[in-house]
Image (cartoon, rainbow, N blue to C red; front, side, top):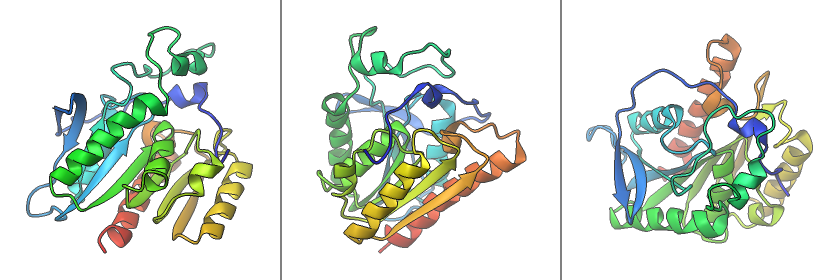
Length: 253
């Protein structure tokens, strides 16, 4: 595995202040947050599919990030990939995330069989809207699905992921486009060993790649960081800038 499975740390973080400006719509029956750039700033024929961490598409922080991508010219679609069953922020230490994956409490499982019908529907919709090139953004849980769409499904062109979890080596080996990764240190999920292995795979397959390592931040920092801490706020902002610069370079080709 190129990154370990999610754990309780994937639910911990700080809610950020701000008022999202996008809108919620149903796309093929899936509730989706859509952030649209001003027409004069929009990158024609380009769009972003943002696949969230386990806190889901209604999390204020995630919606503000989608709005930021739109402010940089990219129409951004962020679907509910959890069938209305995300994990509330800041679960207690005894929270069993594997039970959530298995649907033991809600009856709703959260694996590829449940997630990918949603993400595939969004890709179809984006193509139908005239979007010719799609950038994928995946945070934690969502990283796995950006990688899968870049590889085995072949319908995301350029990828950016932050503090990835649950990515199999075989999935990473299949990607066909440029990939940028924001990594945290310390991070037990995307550990140094997993990071080194991912770099080894990316070197072998020969795609353009970038791995930026941010110190003194935890798993989840690109979405759920405590931005009252100056160094942590800086890392979060730089990780977002990393994503935008990657798309500006490789999606706008």
